[in-house]
Length: 336
Figure 1 (tube, helix red, strand yellow):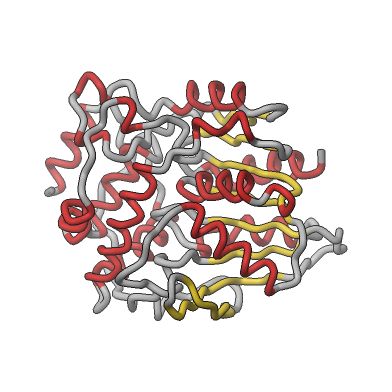
Figure 2: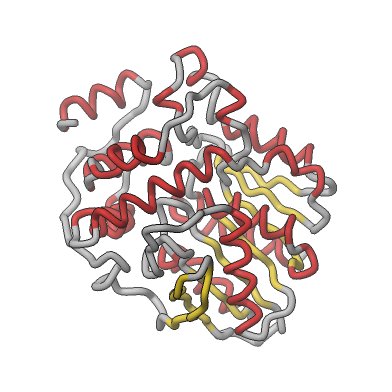
């Protein structure tokens, strides 16, 4: 899609593009994000899953303030990596938390297997094994976007390990398939993923994540993701992304929110319009999807004893869009 078409799309959607829509400088990275600088030293957790050798990259950041004896696990979204939590790591470490930040299998700096049955339960178990290997018994689990779905699954499957659950604009607050979005095969999704560029990533995020308002500091995260698609591992990167897109479409957790038995906080940017697969749906269905202000309130009502923190003017990534506001609320939520 060219620049004019993207601008027309944004204007047709009623979005105010307040900066020129420039191209993102393209850097290429390896299949495991080789070449991208993480904010803290990366370590490797080697384990076997589904009969295959796996290597999970993670950061284990010690408190920089007075240690409070608590651990936080930060789980990235589908279009993000552990590195995207950079500012959150700094804030939580300063507050005295030990911070564990994995890249999930199939993503970013971790193994990208060709033949792997991706499921939220499998990724949750991989994370459980990492925590056990690091000697962590209980932790606060914070997930963003797809990571919010994974964090919810982790809390459902392993409640004894969860001190508190925090979901930041999680995907899966609605069941897209039940709403009428047509299924797409992994093969079809793969062909779409192969067409991914920095420009297409930025256009998507501009429209759905940031309500038509772009800031240059977001470019780093676009460049991080696009660099893997532009690099020598583009085929396996696209294949894993297709597999995990199919996973999140077909494994909703929203119907199980009533079973959550851990203290839960929902942090919702109200201008978010993310709805995977909505482009495949009929217009009358697509219009009903991705209304996060409403979805957040509905989900909070379904989760026993949950607390809702709303950012009405923010989008899909409030921790990136307004870090000071977001982290002030996060620190407050974790202290209560």
